[in-house]
Image 1 (cartoon, rainbow, N blue to C red):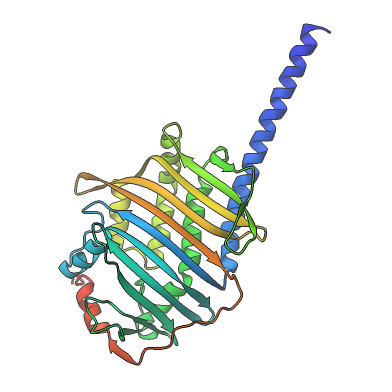
Image 2: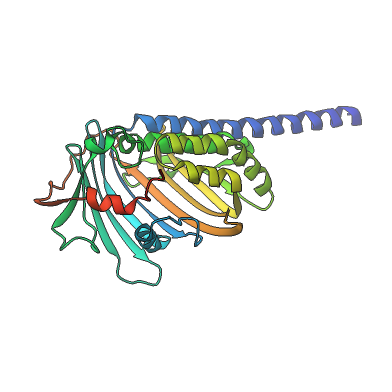
Length: 319
């Protein structure tokens, strides 16, 4: 057997291995992309999740002192949630639990959306757990592009999916890894486990890819009333840099839905010339997809109009 034949066979084998690896990674990325598109088919579902936040001092800074006071409760905190969402018609309920850093006593904010009205209880502002504030979403929707209106609330899952897709579409397929063994979901079904890891080796490439998508990302947020024009300009001007190590993970079921999502990311954002480091750990899961799960909470008997207080929470409009 000639050395030339052996060398040729070895080269062919290496080429096939390389091609297979490339194809597999491409298929894994396509699976993730398809799952994000599939999320738009979720018309009803139950959900639960949690996040641990450590946000830079000035990242969430507002021109309004009362808003700053409320933001100070969450910028370093652990937040958990659990609820039900039905999109047509829009019906939604969730129980938020917020535990500020250093506290052992979480405060709860129950939220209900039904018949075009949002009801919620804020312990620091309401008198007792049976008194709720009420917001008329149809009234807010009239000529509004802010986050608190019926259309933006109803479209939030689609907007979130679009933003996730924007970010992941720009990433190289070689960073998408699928575990050899599937994982078990809460309902007993199995799912593919796919991760994207941010390391010292790929940090620069991933940040370059994300920056290329940033204008479109910010435009999507702004168009859907989830980001003000001045904040969008600030993010675009100062940029957002991810810092290794970090990780994004998805569990995708046999129907193609991303049933379990998690991320652990550190990012740097320059505010007023100072780099601010923030860290976010997030986990959320979806179940009972398109099973029309009914809400379990009734419209509260005691409901106060929140619109007057809302005027004080929003910064004054410059004339």
